[in-house]
Length: 224
Image: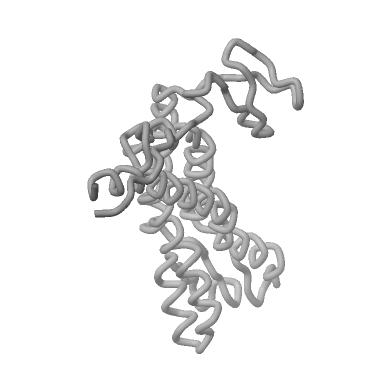
């Protein structure tokens, strides 16, 4: 039997009667309508805002399907005498591996396949558990996942950037030319929609499900 640790409530801004500004992070009393620091409107966190998260998430998922089924890039050589070739994202990765460009293939595969799928799963999980009971450790884990999703979101456009650069540079007339395929638009829209979904998620909901006391305090109390 161990000595009981002093029990301390898990205090959040919501329980303290405060509301945080989503623009600058400063907290203010709940009855205040405008942030005095940055001038943004103060809106308390609301689970009904998750509807916008799910709407953008679903739109991004729908656009991600044709982005992988249709060609990302079309290459035409010798004024069409040798025909034109089309490649989807996965076919482009396989072709890069075939020519020995393993590093570029790995970057394209991670940025165009792994990262988007991980973002879909992470956003869906965060929206699913938002406001549900959690310990302090679990809340910090959810916040870290949200910050990672926010950080890597912009790098998902790397495949579209590559196609855009090649389309602008490889325009050699009779010799060869490269044009973006229909998947480029779908992929760009998918990335944009998932970024909007992540930005629509209110991270303050992560702290709404915290217990009145931390898990450590509860464990210490149970050992007495």
